[in-house]
Image 1 (spheres, rainbow, N blue to C red):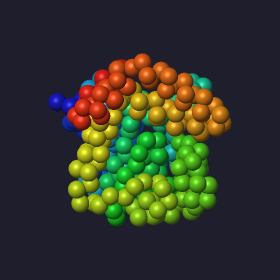
Image 2 (tube, one colour):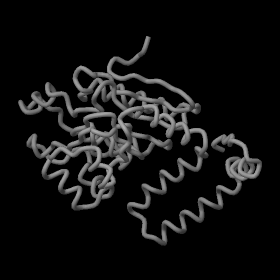
Image 3 (tube, rainbow, N blue to C red):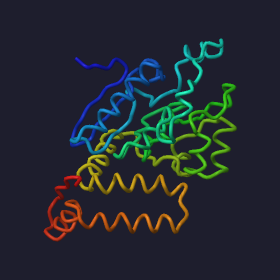
Image 4 (cartoon, rainbow, N blue to C red):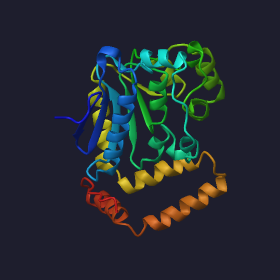
Length: 266
């Protein structure tokens, strides 16, 4: 029996899929779901057989935001305040930013509606795909809230300052085609969406060096604060280290021998 009550976890071809599983409530986010999600994600990160992680939703929604019962409690003044320990955490230890610190690619498969915290979860993923027809919104300004969970920091870096201001200040709903146009997520046909994501994630898991992907993920994050010269020097240092690894030797060998790679991550 599964240890989880509000998510589903499956694994295939070195890909772990974590699906939010409250389809009758459009996968609305709850404290239980948050705890289960983090537990499953950290387990996938620690599993040597998993090389890519997919986040999606069951039913017709990805995640419609916080459960309205929780929002009602918050509006009545019963929301939990951040503890001093929370405020002392590093950049990659915050409530959702820990996704960025996981050294495996995380793919958001936005199969349907994504709002509020649901959209924020997708922002912290490395790659985002959205099914045609899906609708997305930050929603915060239309609920009397500020931009939550670091979204005002993330969105300008992902879609540019003006698009970020538009999405956050207006709280308007956008469809998959616009999300694709502004670079928020890549649109794929709704028909066969999950299968297409599985194939993409399987390619990541089986055709690339997990060591290389982990380093590249970190390089992309460090680029947000590095000057160009720092980024160049850091990349040269990493290349020197790569040349003494099993994965570099295998990367050359499988290409020359015209066969599928057998990367070890070492």
